[in-house]
Image 1 (cartoon, rainbow, N blue to C red):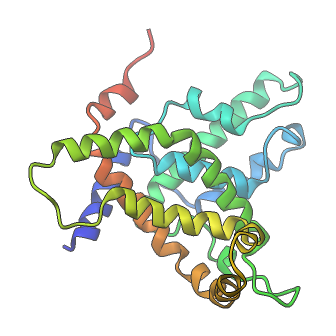
Image 2: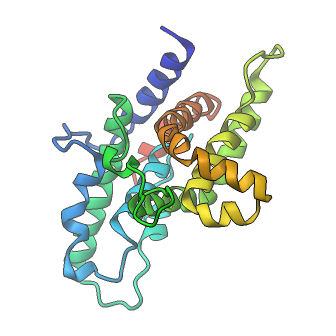
Amino acid sequence: MSSKEGAQTTVSLNRTQIKLGMSKVKNTFPIDSIKEVLSSSALKGVLPNVYHVDGMIFAVAAAPEIPMPEQWMPWLVQPKDNTLLKDDVDELADALMNGLRAHLDAMRKQLPPLPLSLLEPDESHGNIRPSHELVHWLNGLLQVHKQLEPIWHEAWQKLEQQRNERSDKESPEARLSRCLKLFTTLANVDLALKYRSEEQAEQLESNLALLINQLLSLLNDYTALAGELAEALPNQFETFTQPRQ
């Protein structure tokens, strides 16, 4: 088994040990487990676009230490008023947890975290651009990653402290930076072009299709890195499953 495969196995074990009542996921992609509930008229205006929400849930599932539901669910739910009924709230919470389970299950089985149709470039305006759905998905991922930056930072600090010898491996910071650079670029190509020189902008335009094709590989490295960093954080299992008093 290669080191990358070993890392992917580690992240899978770390995620599946969490007591979420993991069930067999019947749908092909994690987003399928939340689409129906999120399309409810009662939730209209309460949540972002379904692809944005799925990207957010992926980032939660991929974190070195998965936060408790009461911490991450409010990041997704932004009601303008208090008109949601208790049944609606319960149904939404169940759907979001199902989405988390689906992403953890996809990581365990090393399946794509998003529909492959999202990776088809949009060429409708003459220039290659990521699909609108992919842009929403990546912005959701980045929104939650920003919330979880302290967890990522703590994890790689602890990992560095635990290393007895200088490692020849690429540093966690460099790997994460490479992932986030691609996610950020594809999430807002026009902004990325704006802050490049004319020559750099032309190069980015010509390489966009290639960058989109590289996304799945970088998403895999993002989750693999989280698994490696998770080993440096103590008592994840006990902390997450601690019964409420």
